[in-house]
Image (cartoon, rainbow, N blue to C red; front, top):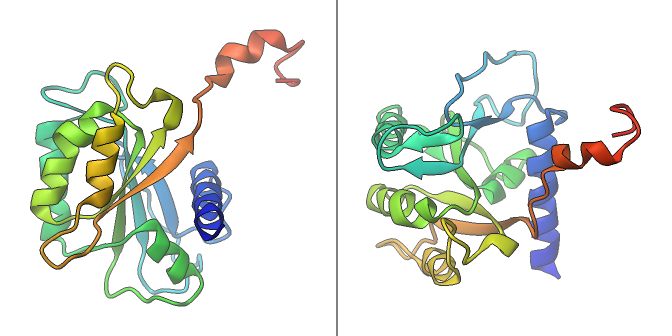
Amino acid sequence: MKNQVQFITISILVVILSLGLASCKKYYVLPAVKPIPKVNESDSLNSAYKVLILMYHEIVPDTNGDEYDRSLADFKKDLAFIKSKNYELISFDDLTKLKNGEKTLKSNAIIISFDDGYSSDYELAYPELQQQNMPATFFIVTEWVGRHHRLKWSDVWVMDQFRNNLGQKLFSIESHTSSHPFLINDSINFPSHDAY
């Protein structure tokens, strides 16, 4: 039951943040390819520091294929930049603790996350994150696991079980959704755009 509550809390938090409805506007959820927004310093968070949530989709070997792709070379540069700026890398659990006043930050922080469960999460991102000892959360679409170009259950298990040299769990596996309906495709079933 505790895991279900934790999952629901994180899922709701991600949805709220991605919709921009959070009362605490120092949280940002961005596709990792977009520029970082300017922060309104009057917004409140239980910290003097800011939290940026990077949301990657697919890491591709060469150049970006579309707006959601990130080339492996650029991803490596992203990780090097994060390290060079000494950002504190935190998890979504840490974010909840921060919001509840149970954790404090020593510097601006970043959460690294991946959306949809692409095979590149395991094949390209995981080795880089592992080598750099950088935590990340992977949100997978469970119906897509095992399909072409998607994570396999064995990949999910390996990432979930990984511990670094200090015995710390670096990677969280969370549910994106069971399925991934593209609601825009269903808009034709509604009498008007407002009804949709």
